[in-house]
Every structure is written in C-alpha cells, then in structure tokens.
Length: 109
Image 1: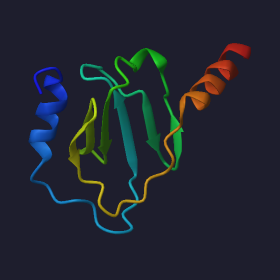
Image 2: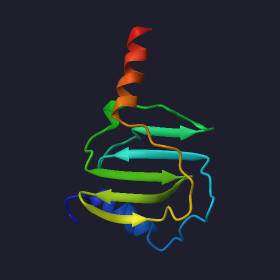
Image 3: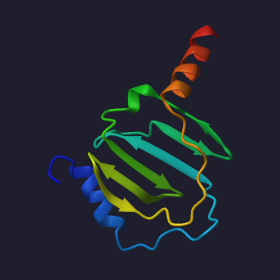
Image 4: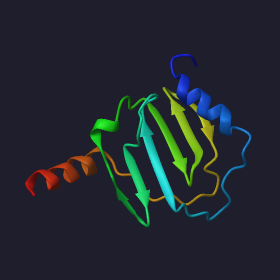
C-alpha cells in the first residue's frame, strides 16, 4: 500500500510477533490517527485516557494502535494490515464526542 508507507512499514515490522494472550491488560496504549502523525491522538496510561490532541489527527482513515510499545493493530483505508490484539482486554477508546467534551473543558478553565 504505497498510499500509506508508514502504516505498511509498521505492520511489516510486527507481522511475525504473536498476538496478545487472553486476558492481557495493557499498561499503556497509544492510538495514532494518520499515516505520518508524529505523536498519538489518544494516550492511555495508568487506567485513564489523557494527552488527547486533535492536532495529532492527520487522517482518520489510518488507525495505528501501539500497545505497551508494540504495534498491535493497523488499519489503512478499509484494509486491516495488522491485528495482534488477540485476547487483549482494551479499554474503550474515546470517540469524537469525548474529544469535544475534553476540549470544551479546557476552554472553559
């Protein structure tokens, strides 16, 4: 997929790693929205989502999820390039409404 070179490379780097075992609970999750974003749009650590930034969303058609410093899931366009989530138990990833409410909270303070 030459349209998504970084997503393709990240998927190729992790394709031979095993899936996460049943019941695995990640300590840290980073969600990248875009092929060339320099930082995550969503960041989960210590049981909560934080460091959520709209400026780090470059293209919502590319979703790359890093779990405990390992690429776990990558989708580019309509194609899943990597799915190692296996039996991992992931917290719900905030949606756009969550982002808007977070931004509103910061603007009011």
